[in-house]
Length: 227
Image 1 (cartoon, rainbow, N blue to C red):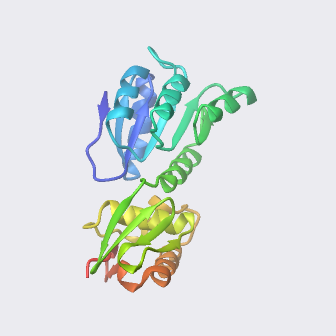
Image 2 (tube, rainbow, N blue to C red):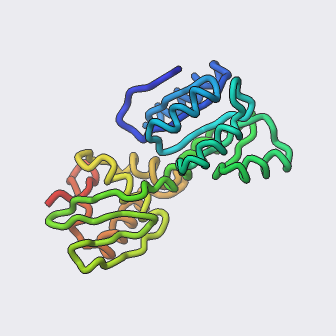
């Protein structure tokens, strides 16, 4: 088993090709992710059931337990972490089978690195924990399925866009951390977006939830509101 020790979002990589696993791990660590890697389906299933991850990357042809059987087992046990199936099997029937097994995305080897990283960022944006408490000033917000509920405001609900929700969820998972604009661009948006996209979505969230929801740390970036 390979593991990395950073502060970024957690990724479960289940891949039996050790050389490929090490390459993918390096790519993800360079992007700020924290990676746990398993070399067979049984180990991957155990980790997927007992630990929390933001994204899973699953090979199909795994020892001990096939990748799609692993994914089906996770889905049957209510593990909803977004999954990318990474495999050499690229026929239409294979892709359909992978998506029907519960994968959110399917990428055929060999792959282009920028596309792979963009797909992982997209999956990370989809990861919304069932309920995240957001201590913002004197309020406690609850983020669930792209809906923010304010218990102190007669359960007022605010529906967020996918990007708004991804930005808020990213800040909420590390409430003491100050995120720079480039970090948020990589974690929440697409690299093709301008850096000003981050500021735009901060503005959208403040307009929907109040200015106190996100603090500006001048010269550095943004963090979850702490006032």
